[in-house]
Length: 191
Image 1 (cartoon, rainbow, N blue to C red):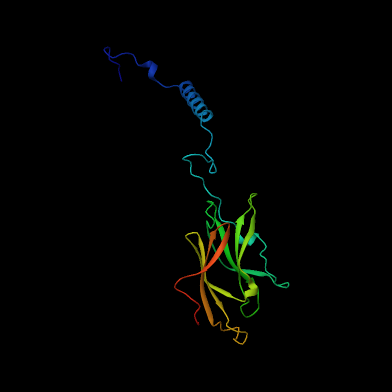
Image 2 (image 1 turned 90 degrees about the vertical axis):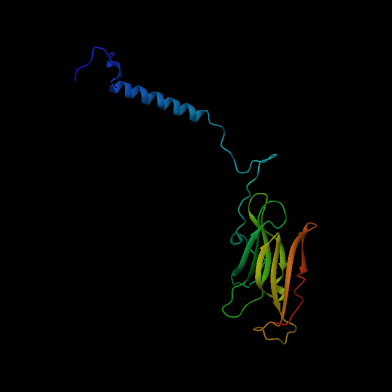
């Protein structure tokens, strides 16, 4: 191809390896400079006006020793549910637990597990003592409250296989403690 006399000389537009190296070095300098000038990384636990805080996950009930007296047998967490029960913005875990048994259904306990100030899980409340001899069904955490159906016995003569009383209860945090109330539509009924 011949160059035209009317066209300007474009010899300086041919890229040589030294041009590519210079361009790569300049780009690397720009990228490195931009990396040094970045703002500090955002933290999920920052607080202040207009800054939403991210709560830690609910505590793991398996990481805490529940106050069950099982005489050498282990414990079993039968049900668990999590939510902010005391309005502090951190989730608690409510659990139904009982002693392990080869057969039958031992009485249940209901406990609330929260994180300590050091972040470790700990039992902060016992809602149902196993000594009450109750079984727990329909267990949930909703709208800041723990709800459950408690099955029990009207007398020691009732066979342990067949509870004859049922009560729907709710626990809510009020005045620095969990307050138990019977749910309005469920007075003690025969099962």
